[in-house]
Image (cartoon, rainbow, N blue to C red; front, side, top):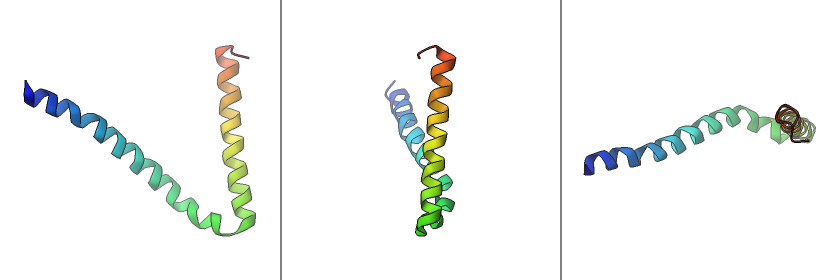
Length: 65
């Protein structure tokens, strides 16, 4: 039974490392764009716009507004 719980306790660590790796690999190509102010402003604006679009869409779909 101890082996079972040792094995189950590894899954959260795997999930965290997998998720962190995906986010780091997705953000790595965007880092050079943050070097210049014009592209940094555009990139930040696109991220904020995407977040707002997702928020408003989910609120409308779930009837929270």
